[in-house]
Amino acid sequence: MATHVITGAGSGIGAAVARRLHARGDELVLHARDAARAKELAAEFPGARTLVGDLSDPDKLSWAFSHQSLPDRVDSLLHIAGVVELGRVGDLTPKSWRHQLNVNLIAPAELTRHFLPQLRATRGHVIFVNSGAGLNAHADWSAYAASKHGLKALADSLRHEEHANGVRVTSVYPGRTASPMQAKVHQQEGKDYDPSKWIDPESVATTVLMSLDLPRDAEINDVTVRPGR
Image (tube, rainbow, N blue to C red):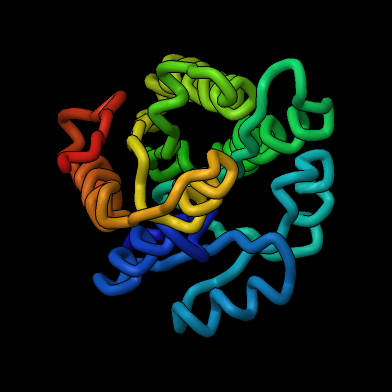
């Protein structure tokens, strides 16, 4: 039975992935930003463990984890949590830049550092759910795109560094996906939100599980998922 550490399991793509893995009987360790959120996740996914730490303050993750029991075995680390705040370069404040870089880039690097020993032991898998913005940047998306371009660099470097240890690394680049984050993006853009126009989170979850379940003779390095409508 595989053990998966998942960020962002509370909604959207992360929730879809967690539901699929939970349904097939895998062990889940679900990251939560605080104790209240951890309680909610534990109720939603009976039998799952939780791990509390604020991704927006990655400097304190090590301290938070030192007061909790980390899993001895980790077969995959799934980075799915993310935040977005649109704005022009001339308007974005350092606070906005730091928040997006912390949650979308630095915290994934820190979590990966903590779980690499377990992942090496199992010849495990790290999956970064990135974004189309990790490949192309457009007006008003500078800070978010910068964090996601950085996440691509993190994944690429990690793949080279850990190849000899048998750790597989995959980046998934979804286009616009029907989720609470997408609703927030539309609100920031001043547009009406119609979830039927965008990718179903279950479709991205299928891509993630396909990457996880690929036989050991191959690995998916990068996969882009685009809206089909």
